Length: 104
Image (cartoon, rainbow, N blue to C red; front, side, top):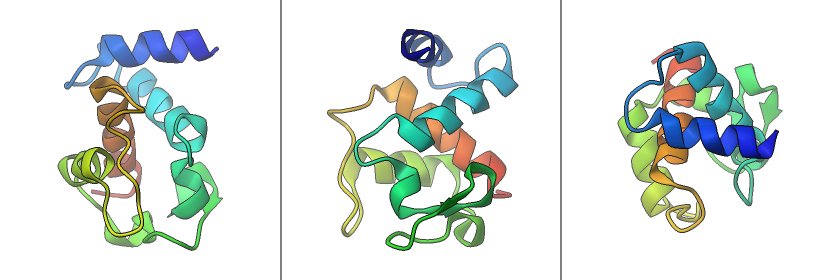
């Protein structure tokens, strides 16, 4: 499964993959378990059934994909940078997922 996720993320690139639903599924999987610490540990996001209490509630913030990607690359406040841990394609998959399901 992990190699499938990595392959899909690399194929996704900066734009949506040929199958946007698959791209969002990859973003969700990465949000839940693809980074250390996982996004779901700190952030509340209804679609991911996460109830983190450290970072902002993403359903209320409704960040754009660009804003999420920037936060993942650079870190924000207590949130670390994931630039050395995730590929750009993986960062974009998470960013598109969060933006899409938070109602952006």
